[in-house]
Amino acid sequence: MFILLLLIWFIFNGKITWELTVLGMILCACIYFFMCRFMDYSLKKDISLMRRSVSFLYYTGVLIVEIIKSNLQVMHLTLTDREIVEPVIISYRTRLRSKLGRVILANSITLTPGTITISLEEDELVIHCLDKTIAEGIENSTFEQLLERMEKQ
Image (cartoon, rainbow, N blue to C red; front, side, top):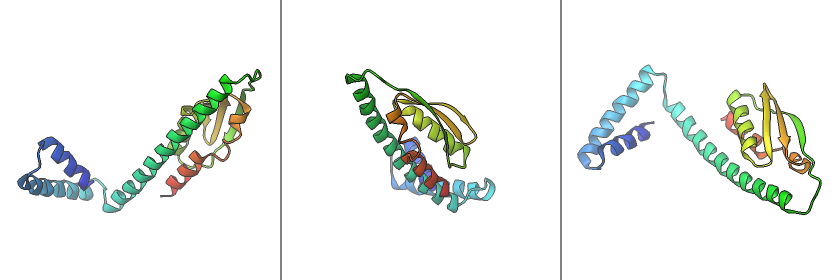
């Protein structure tokens, strides 16, 4: 948080000189001390936040790759001469404990082409898949594995 405060200081000042750097470091240290003392903030939470942000960036990269792969799969499904498309609705129980993790999982499933999360109640997801071949990989998705790892941090 100290580094973030210092970056904001530099952005608002518009230039970097040694005087502004020293003054900014002093002010940011005072604000950080105030946050630790009165706002239930700590260095431990700062390190945890940094670890989670790295995991979240990795998750975003995996999500983008999965969106591209799903786009190609749906394109192949629609552009081939296959006449029978078998849409399917599946019910799936997730192993995620937190509400935030379940919501992120549901949104990630909806963002990938060919799947839509119809409902999310407690730990049960109801998902509509464009074809039954798309529904095969949902039970052991990388999304859920990464979110489980993020929950443990």
